Length: 100
Length: 105
Image (cartoon, rainbow over all chains, first blue to last red; front, side, top):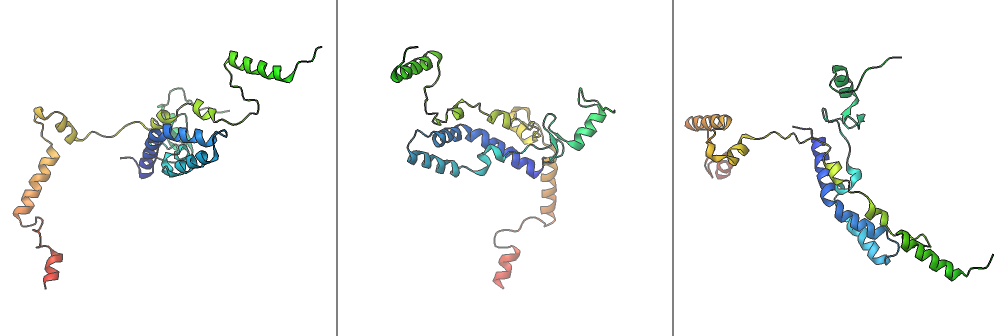
C-alpha cells in the first residue's frame, strides 16, 4: 500500500487528467484579450471553481520506492538514496559509479 | 524607389499571412492560441506511478464464479466469527448494547 502522500498525488494526477480539456478551454477564454471582459471574468471564476488538485502545479513527483517528495531524480523516478542503492546493486541499466 | 501606399502594404501583409497559413495580427493582441496549441499533459502526468494495486481474491471470485474458488482467509474469518458467537461474544442485538442498557437504568 503506498503512502498517504503518494495516494494524494495519484488522486491529484487523475483529477488533472480528467479536468484538463475543460480547464484549457476556460484558460483560452481568459487569455484571449479579444473577447469581452465579462466573458473572460466569468471564465476566471469557473477556473477558480475547480478543485486545487485539478491544477497541474498541484502535482509533485515522488519516489516510486519510498514516496519521498524531495531529491527525486526525474529520469529514474527514485529519490537520491534509492537511486544510489539501486545503482550500486546494478539494477539501473547504464548507471555506473565513477571516480576521478 | 516609388512610394507604396500604406493600405496596399496592409493588403499585402494579409495576403502573405493567408498564403503561408499565418494569423494576421498586426497589433500582436493576445489571442490565447498558444493554450489551444499546447499538448495535453494529462496522460503523461497520470502515468507516473505504475499501477501496482494488488488484486483481491474477491475480485477473482467475482470475475469467474463458475470456478468455485474458495477464499481461504475469508473462510477462516467466518469460522472464527461462528466460534465467537458460540461463546456468546457476538455482536449484541439492537437495544441490548452497553449504551442502550445504560439509558434504561
